[in-house]
Length: 265
Image 1 (cartoon, helix red, strand yellow):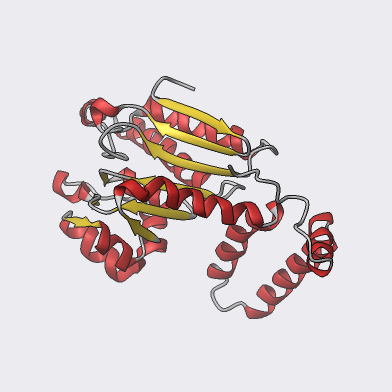
Image 2: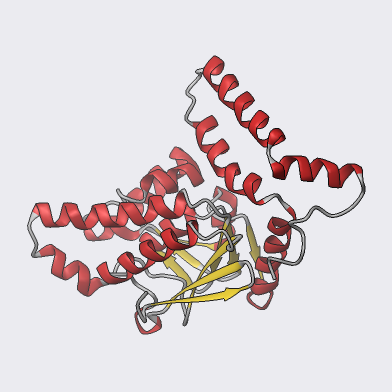
């Protein structure tokens, strides 16, 4: 972990703060590596139930550090490919993290910052946040983050925002599906905690498996028989698991399941 990334543990919740406030939390190779490694560690930590991604200072993340981009402009094509693959690994690690993830978005989120938001399972933005997929203004495209952004907002919306690079507000982000909720700035932390409380009531295995289920169903491409078999196998495994049996027993006995004990506070 580097000074550019701060990690705070509060019981079962790990909060990751991008910590380059003077650069609006723009990321470079160092921050990408630190964030990837930290997420991998948290993903393997059974004591962590949820991860919150946030930013210190005036912005969530301005995307790529311009000085870093200037350096990469003088690098070879192969060096740029390896650099882009590191960012791709970060996005995939966040997208597939076996923990529920929440993006706490304030100030501004541009370029790769939008990618981080799209990779999180739940995204909550403060009213007044500005968003933008601004790469086209530099003669570039949001290629690495595109699978996650398109999954969030759909191809029709992506064609517009990728091409124009224009800024849009939190209300638009909500309308097109990039974020799930927009609240007043002073209510942002409470809104995040409300989602953590809900996550804490879900079975840990079930919550972790939810994104796998969504991803596999979305990727089925009409292979209904194979999908039915996979889904039947998943629910059978969950029903037979210790967690599934505990959840059902708790429901029938009208008591909270063992995993509901304030872990997400």
